[in-house]
Image (cartoon, rainbow, N blue to C red):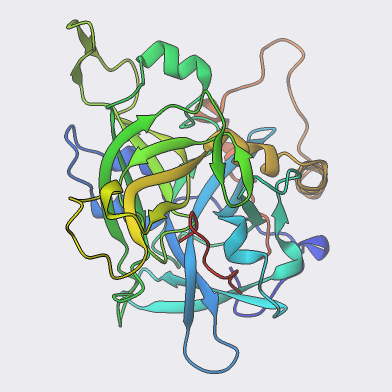
Length: 346
């Protein structure tokens, strides 16, 4: 992040090691959420005419290109799309205990090619030596169909989300809240939303204004009892990135949420939230525009340092196995207001 907007097309280059923790490194074995988890969350809004006006939640993620790490800000499309201002404010915590306003250009954000998919992504540069940040690895921590089978993820598994509560942003620092729940329906059949029929998980977790764009995780307890009664041990991490909170269903019919004699003052939450699958985030991150930018930056950094791949006699290293000299080149791409609320948007 910069104090002034940076057009990603005119990337000037950075030599930073992404030393911020990954979200999965901060978990205990139960559903108690470490404060480190909250460090992947940022607040999105505008401040052109005075104080910060909160609009939604964003979060920080990584993807890799040729072993180099690239940071992204992710949120819901309906948070970014209606913004008329050229500059979008990102409210983020610093390592010295303060909160800062940094900025992106709206033109640097890209939406999913399918306008029904409520995802927006912006390449970002948030130096972890200055900001108190953690990251979701958007490839390694993602819930995929293969992982669902391997870990037997399904209805009833615990989930949680971390995001903004508009009535308690925090004066000195961002204060994200956590809401917990369970998977109510898997994303194996399209669901109806204000944007149309979409692929989505349904979760038993109340969403509220400000939580749009929040990251949602499925929690894998070390031991779980499956529907058939067998005990399953988690085969990998204690949590995985399930997707992005889009919103929740509301109703005026008291029989949907309470007994028939309850007086309904207006729209009432049904308690069912809509989560856009994390795979949709990767589909935006891997748009040709973003991929070509990352490839150009990698080529530039290698040319500047005289780096040459030594891959003739061995497989390319994984990110955990990167040689020290290659780690030194890890770079973050520099870059970095509200649609009227609809029934399934927060």
